[in-house]
Image (tube, rainbow, N blue to C red; front, side, top):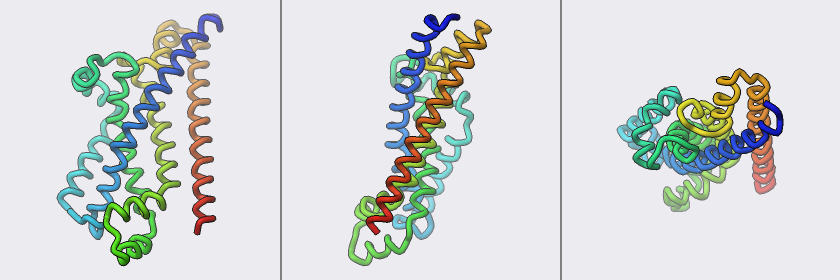
Length: 223
């Protein structure tokens, strides 16, 4: 396949991948952030200590993280079809991508929030701060650099997931690599697809690392 033939396929595949990853990231953050906070708040010694709730949420998150994505992708076909109306295409793939990433991101949020100095939490508590206030004014701001790093890691994982989604009706670079590279024995197309994925992942990591450093500098300046 010549470059003029490859170009529109690669451009469309890249746009589809970015579309899927962007919206799956948004849903993952909206779903994983409260789950991660709940794991911290309901843990032993937490502000909302509740062992049954903590164990239940922990088990659900662990099950979600332990399932191989390709199996989850196939298992969620009926649910995806119910939500979107189809299980084929980039919009349909957002559903399994998000569901697969939410438990992963939740654990990263839990780790980030646990790193916050408990003395700050106690200080706000002593001034009569409510739990929502502590979460909003202490936990999230103090954990922000780590949370941004967690989002960066999640985006990179989702890029890998989106490539696998190409095997079961998803669009994006993974689908293009399988259809036009692997099935047609076009090594050049495969290599170009891999190169684009490497560039996208590197760009995401670079942006994420830059944001973390900027937030860390601002935090040191403010303190």
